[in-house]
Amino acid sequence: MLVRLQKYLSGAGICSRRTAEEYIKAGRIKVNGEVVTQLGVQIDPEKDRVEVSGEIVRDNHQLIYIMLNKPKGYITSRSHRGEKIVFDLVDIKERLNPVGRLDKDSTGLLLLTNDGSLHHRLIHPSFDHEKEYAVEVKAPIDDMALRMFEKGLAIDGVKTRQASVHRIDARKFSIVLQEGRKRQIRRMVEAVGNRVVSLHRVRMATLQLGNLKTGHWRYLSKKEISSLQRSCDINQNQD
Image (cartoon, rainbow, N blue to C red; front, side, top):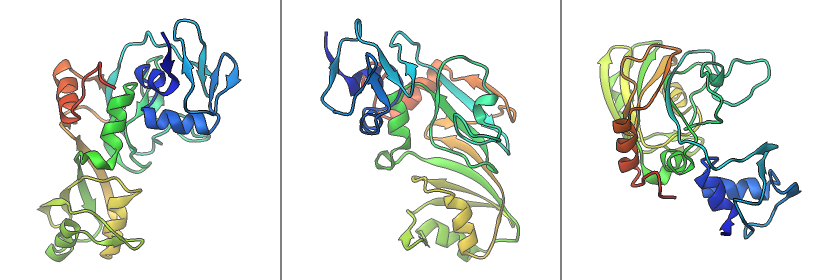
């Protein structure tokens, strides 16, 4: 049975269909040893050999969902010369992808999975999934600054979306975002004349970090997976 290459890659947990299209356009996909650059290509999963960046795709994989409590000093990447990466901490053979990123100095909840559909829906801003962070800043932060974070403030001429902010003490607050611009919280804090000392993600959509120790990881429970899928309006058999 023939299937579109994008659908095959998504079903194999490599990436979302949209990301697969980007890979095809970039020449990162080979079918039977030949680079494919056309989006309409169909394959026979039982006969054709598909490679992504030199790695053979196998569609008999198990979907895997892992929560990591990322320590400071690790890069959220599959490879980064001269740096420690988050995959140094996760001792499994399957190829997983991080859902969103935490910068090198940030800590906390990082979801790793080979579920392409879930990955796409959790990171795409149109799905409005929440991400919650605990933030500590260098100097006491006033109420006016926190209200600016709630209402949105301009970064590079583009206003941030409204956020939910709760003060913890003079230098600490929690913030819930529905977007993930690069170094967004750090830049918001800098915009009001302060500096982030620590940035720790505690929640993504329905997934809570809980008491998982720094640098440790675990598989998600069936209940956690089902809750994430419901929040994304998908299930394992849905593209």
